[in-house]
Structure formats: structure tokens, C-alpha cells
Length: 267
Image (cartoon, rainbow, N blue to C red; front, top):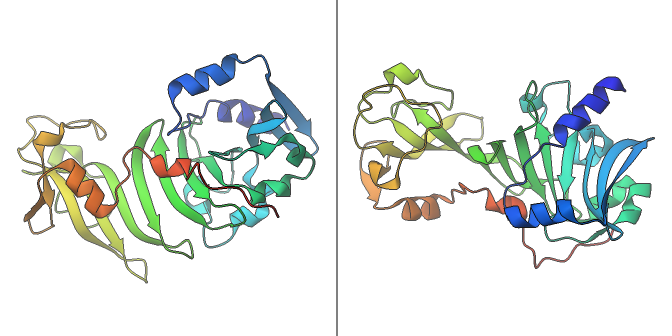
């Protein structure tokens, strides 16, 4: 229980991408917002005006969201830290705290810390009301998108977007040796994920000129420093906007906010 309490404290530091900073600050300052804790089952929840704002609990507590198709075990290891659920666009009554499975009936975002992280390095997913298959998945470090997975209707990854400096010739999604990036290092790489799991480079955004010294992996360039095109070096798009729209790249992780007009379903 001691370790769980420590994990909950770390999880409380999560940053929610897609929500305006002013809204988060106002919510924190509202006198009606308060924290509710429970040991059976163990959770820490934030509530306001009889509405559940967020809840932190072990991801196994909502077992149906841990199905084999969308398992986060490979990213988070066996020793899960508490997940944080939030409900973009959904009004979730506080009463679901008495039957946590009621959370399944609402659109929800789940953030699970990657093992050994301090809480701001997470796998973030968005689930539709009544479904246990995520519609999108990101790897985030604070507000920085490191990876985006485009999923099919079964929750399987069909396309992978990797952000961070790498050799343009790299054909896998692993980190590159930053001292050997080559003449035109890639900032964004888009991989098709084939049925057997093999990744095939499909598109990328690369730097027009060589670095004079090794950059930090996530040192973001200016858009006009990049070219946008295919692995063979053919420039296909003229701007970052054209590139990201064509490849459905979500560098702000806005899809984690869902559709605020969508009404939650009851289960």
C-alpha cells in the first residue's frame, strides 16, 4: 500500500494535453473541487459539483480496458503505476465511484506512466463510451509527442509516427546515434505497420542541411528548415501543414480530447 500511495503522488503530476492551461488553473482554484480517496478499492479522485473530473487507480482495476488487443504491458512493464483517467467532453457523475465499472459508459482518456518514469512520461489512449478498444494512442513526455499510433477498428497499430532526430536511412523506429545523423537527418518518420508487425518507412520530414554538432533528440526545428516527402528523397509536400494533414499526424495530441459534442452512453 505504501508503494501504491507513492505512485498516486507521482501520477498526480500528469499533464493533460489538449485542455487550455487557464481551464486547468481555474479548476484547481475552484473551492468546490476536492479530492476523494478510497482504500477499498484504492483510488484518488477529483470531484467538483458532484461531477467526477479525474481518477487515479491501478489500470487493472478497470480490467476490460486491459484487453489483449490494446495491452500497454509492453510499454509499461509488469509493475504498473497508477493510471489517470480523465473525461474530455463527458459529464461523469460522482456516483460512479461506488461502481467503478460505470466509467466504461463514458468517453475517457487513460494515461499510464511508462515504467521508471516520474509520471510525465506516459502512454496516453482515448476510448469511446462503451468500448474497450482505444481509437488513438500516444507516447508523451509532458506535452511532447514522441510517438503516435494510428489504430484500426480492432485497436491494432497500422501506422506509427515517430518524432525525434534520426538518420533518414533508418528503417526501424529505434533511437539513432545522434553523432551519426548523416546529411539530411529525419525529424518525423511515418511507418506502415504490416500484418506481421514489420515496419516499413512510408514518409518523413527531414532537415535540409546537416547539423554542425549533434542536437538533442527532441530539439524541435523550424518548419522551414525541413523538407517533406518520401524515403527516396522525393519532396511531396511543401509545408508542415500539408504533410501532417496528408499523413494524419497529430503533433498536439488533440485527438486525446475526443469529440466534445459526443454524448456519453449508459451501460
